Every structure is written in C-alpha cells, then in structure tokens.
Length: 342
Ligand SMILES: NC(=O)C1=CN([C@@H]2O[C@H](COP(=O)(O)OP(=O)(O)OC[C@H]3O[C@@H](n4cnc5c(N)ncnc54)[C@H](O)[C@@H]3O)[C@@H](O)[C@H]2O)C=CC1
Ligand SMILES: O=C(CO)COP(=O)(O)O
Image (cartoon, rainbow, N blue to C red):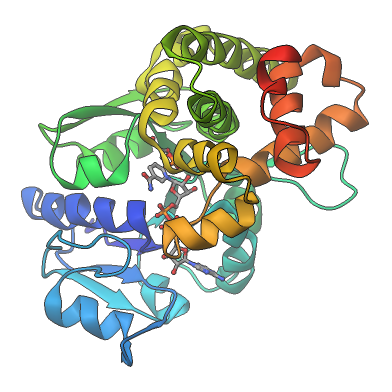
C-alpha cells in the first residue's frame, strides 16, 4: 500500500522536519513523493507565505536560509492538506492542536496514522487533570498516534548537525513506518514502546528550560545550571510516574529525556527568553513578541498548566522547582527565588 504523508504545521520545527521528510520519501517505494504541508497563512511583504514557500522553497519567516525539497508543497487549507493522507505529522505549538483536531474530525481517511512532534499538554479550564496531545488526537480523530521527541533544536537539525531523537509507539509497525520518514544518518531515530513517557519528557522539560534561562540571567554559573537540570529531571520523573505508573525509567535516558533537557537548558528559546526576563525585567509575553518573530514559547504556558494541576491536588510542595518557575513567570516573584525556594 502507498503511504502519503501530510505535515500539519510549518513553524521552526515543522519546516526543519519538512526538509527531512521531503527527502526521505524518495528512499522508499511505498511513499507517495508529494508531501503536503499545512501553513497557517500569513502575509510577508504583501505575499502569501505559502506562495513564497512554493516558489523559493524556503520558509523565509520560520526557517530562513534552509532550502526545502521541491516535493514539499505548502497548502493554506488544512482539510485539503490532510484529506488524502495516510500518515499525519502534527507539529504545531500545543495551544493550537485542539482547534485543528476539531476541524479535521470526520475529514480524514479512516486508515490514517498520526505522530505528534508537539511538546506540551492540554489542560481545559476548571479541569482536575490534563490530557496528552497524543490522546487528544486519538480521541478526537479515532486514529492511533505515536510521539517523536528528542534533543532537537530545529535550526541545528535543519543544518544537518548530528543528533538523536526518540519515537514512542503503541503499535510497533506504526513506530517503524514513522522511523522511515524521519531517520537519517544525522538525525538518528530510536523507537521505544512508551508513547506517554516520550511525550511527558518533551512537555515537562520546557518548564525546566525556563529555570535554566533564569539562572543564566542571574549569572550563577555551570554548577547551578547542573543543579537545575538534576532537580528538574527528578521532578519530571516524579510527576510522570505519579500520573502514569507504567512509564519506563529507561525512557528518561533516551534522547527525549535527559538529552533534551540538557540541550534545551543550553540553547533553546525558553532558555533565551527566560534569561532576557532577568536581564531586562520585561514580561515573558512581551519578550516572546520582541525576540521570537512569531515563534511560540511553550514553557511558560506549560508551567501554568502544571501549576494548575499541582495546586488543585495539593502537590506544590512536592514539586518546588516547577512551582517556583510558575511563580516567577506569572506572579512577579523575583527570579533569585529559583534557588531560594527549591
Ligand atoms: N523549534 C524547535 O527547536 C523545536 C520545537 N518543538 C516543538 O514543536 C512544536 C511546534 O514548534 P515550531 O514548529 O517550532 O513552531 P513555532 O514556535 O515556530 O510556531 C510558530 C508556528 O505557529 C503558527 N501559528 C501561529 N498562529 C497560529 C494559529 N492560530 N493556529 C495555528 N498555527 C498558528 C505559525 O504560523 C508558525 O507556523 C512545539 O510544540 C515545540 O515545542 C520540538 C522540537 C524542537
Ligand atoms: O524542544 C526543543 C529542543 O529539543 C526546543 O526547545 P525551545 O522551544 O525552548 O526552543
């Protein structure tokens, strides 16, 4: 059977993976060579971004300087992008997934499979708990979803610098199929049977990355950064296992676990904006606008979601690092409390 891949999202990471997937479909007989990519349409110098991508073969706003394969076709219509696909790759900031799933409901082939590359969780107002993005995709669209996450800063991946990543699967055949479209000699994919573990590592590390940036802004040095990473990993594992006892310990040693935590505390957007929060005193929202040119921070909203869950369950004292990071982001608590309150 011929598989047809559609990419839902075309931001910084979405564009980097478009380069990989567009290249890899040529390596296997069973993949359709056209890869449609849904673009949230916007105007750049009076032109549609989709038109620019389809003529220049470059996402000039979200991944400038990187050529995309010509078989990646940008499309502003979500339904048209997905209606004939058998493999859906979700790669949008987490706050937009629920709206996308609502639009796609009943509009995709029933034999579709999905993979999420999204680092975040879904928390509805007044809800006690939270929902995984892969569960949201599965429940709203009635299809199985794998999860890909790893130490993967998009610009470095797009430049072809070696790194690893992790795919979590429930159904091994799906995991292998998705590995085929992502694996390259410079983007090494491991597949493991732990969707939830891979997903929670990716979501929670974004909160800790804010902590990494705060201590950079405070010029606290390498030992303090290492402490934030260690305590962060401890809280990530404790939280994940508290809600999902079947998550495997080994998952935290994969690229999606400790490696992503290290890279994101060293070089990610959450880190960069948190550092600037300390040095400028500006709010995270303002800095996101000023520094990221339309890219989205995931760590602050995840910290808020997490705090909502912890406070409703009376668990804040058990997770002092995540709680303090939330308070610094949203309650004007001074950044130096990051080391005083943990
Ligand atoms: N950038 C990176 O280095 C990495 C990002 N990720 C994860 O991948 C996911 C997607 O991130 P990026 O591709 O970097 O996105 P991004 O941060 O570049 O986000 C901007 C994208 O959101 C779109 N957008 C804006 N408003 C929208 C709306 N109302 N509805 C739908 N889309 C809208 C923009 O058009 C643009 O494509 C996130 O969960 C992120 O944590 C994972 C690994 C690496
Ligand atoms: O997830 C990432 C790297 O693996 C990117 O992190 P940021 O969103 O902080 O840039």
